[in-house]
Image 1 (cartoon, rainbow, N blue to C red):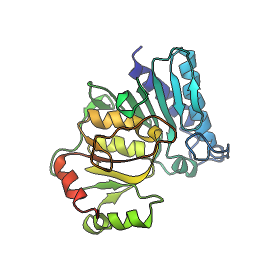
Image 2 (tube, rainbow, N blue to C red):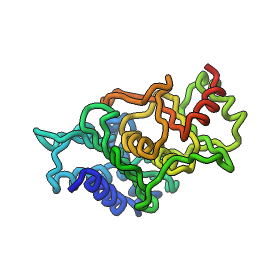
Image 3 (cartoon, rainbow, N blue to C red):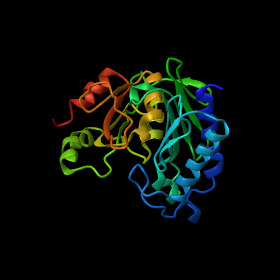
Length: 266
């Protein structure tokens, strides 16, 4: 079985196991601080166990890097790394806000740039995005690409949750000049929506994003022909360490990238 099919099946099983939990008392709970630094909720634990059980059952030789469980070695001779944020947008899931997803990716080496396969599933409806390196990005079995035309409404995705005053000051011109800014609370799903052409640019300059949050989105955006850069406008890359935190900019084309970045106060 191809790696992408393993990730897709695991992602589908997450959806089946958690789709009725959102907004219920069973979604919450406090299981302490997970490997990624956030409080682990019951819905997170159930979703991660689903993936680990599936990978073990199928004897998939890998090292899992989970948001909650941390590093789990499923083989002494791993083929690579499964990078897992089994529920991205846990706060939305616990409260019942219908915007959260699973994010699963495979990397052949210990670098973000070595991600070869990624799957993001909207856990509110089961809609699935996926991509494999050099094979394109897909949504519901149709190939997707970032928005290339002049949009009717220019939509700027921007995550400023917990941003410093200095960063908010830098970003203020964007809010002043663009009426349609968006952030929904699950970076992975927002990257997938961007790749599908629903946003023109998506920015997160907080230096807070973990690799688990963006690994699947990384390959999906790349395969959808999006531009993906770090805060210094270099090609986005990082190691897979739990200490790693990144900023990123995903843009549909050079024109929108130049336009938006010219507004940010250096």
